[in-house]
Image 1 (cartoon, rainbow, N blue to C red):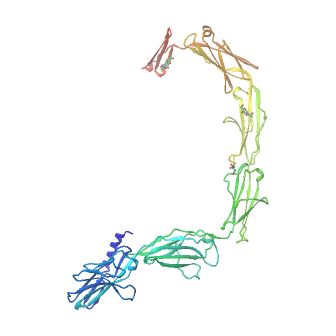
Image 2: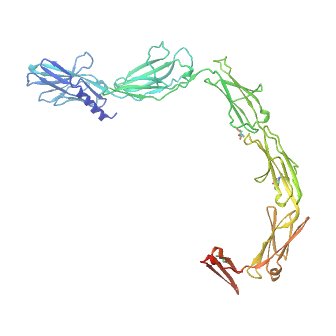
Image 3: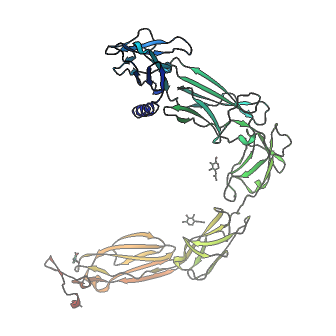
Length: 557
Ligand SMILES: *[C@@H]1O[C@H](CO)[C@@H](O)[C@H](O)[C@H]1NC(C)=O
Ligand SMILES: *[C@@H]1O[C@H](CO)[C@@H](O)[C@H](O)[C@H]1NC(C)=O
Ligand SMILES: *[C@@H]1O[C@H](CO)[C@@H](O)[C@H](O)[C@H]1NC(C)=O
């Protein structure tokens, strides 16, 4: 609360109430019947008077009534035209001043200042008159602290009330009030300990004069209260007849209640397959959870609390699993549940013939692939990622070199993600070597070195013979063997070319590689380039020109 704003509100209130009058003889004294102030702030208590007969010797005195019915004690006074003085030896000494207009100002107001203040006017022959102002002191209490009892859980259905929680709110003035809430509904305030639900309140007045209040809630909770949320609120007054509230944090109760039924469930989300870990969970609707016993097809099997875990299951783990709970608070209840576990499987894939197959070029080859599974399954023959057959039979009519390699049969159960089995076989195609269409070699001029590549299929791997021979090397590229030769482009080579001859036990093949001069003019007219390079007596000149008119392409033949 903003102190300044509040000060103004208080003053307004004071003025509105400015109507109270007490007449005594012919002296009429006017005060505010009530002045409200926050603890620690300053309070102003105005006092004015009228007299019937004017007096030269009028005295205005402010008194307090320390306790109801006790003798009044003066705190400050001022005679007309004289100095204002405050009295020694009162609870207000040092904190009160009386103004020229007889207003009593009290600084650092304390809760103990909440008293009746009397403004008494003595006006010689006119007599004496007084009027009272009630000073009200306010202070907002702290946010309430709600704590659960440290004792153990409460049992539902007990016939004596148990402590639910204690709510404490500190340092309020005037004395605030605690209201209990259960699930946001206020609980009626009951102090009678014979009721099922009641509150035991207590109040402590601190040395500061502020109040610390406490309330302990007792109830006989039922199972329906297991999730109930409890909260307490402090309700307190502030100046201007305002009622304010502060809420505590919430608590729930640690409630014990018997189990009435059990649920046994499989936590695996996908169909269970061989190799999976299986978790089954048994729980009851009671608190705390009771002990659980598990059986499989009648035989005892060990669980961990409410969990039954099976590592890397096999098809032999199929069966009926039972969970049995025993709650000594409800021995009549049937606390059992069952799960029928089905472990899906697929047998290893059987490929026949199983041995690597070696066939001659052009021969026929066929494989069968079979498996068994716990549910409808598929078998696919694949080479790399290409699917070749979906019915278990793979038949190759005319074996060529590029059909050689590894073939895989994959069995799968589509209804069970991840349940697959596979096997592979190798095919070797034997036969006479075959040279791929040779490339033409090019040299700048006769006598230069030229490099030629001859690649050939064939199994067993063919032997290479170059005519004429040169510097040779052999490498394997996939199912081809490649021989590279580097030799001098002699006049004879330029004329007759170079012959690559390959052979293995099944036969031979040979191809001639022609070697020609590089074309003097590279006709790049499509790209608009004109590139001319020629060499005269070892000096090579390259002329590159960009053609501007593509439509008139130059053609050199
Ligand atoms: C089964 O559990 C073991 C150990 O807890 C773990 O190493 C293994 O990866 C799990 N298997 C599967 C299929 O999740
Ligand atoms: C097939 O040949 C490859 C490559 O030589 C080899 O890694 C693989 O083990 C062979 N597979 C079978 C089933 O023999
Ligand atoms: C022109 O030919 C020479 C020699 O063959 C070559 O190095 C150059 O890259 C070619 N330039 C263009 C633009 O084609």
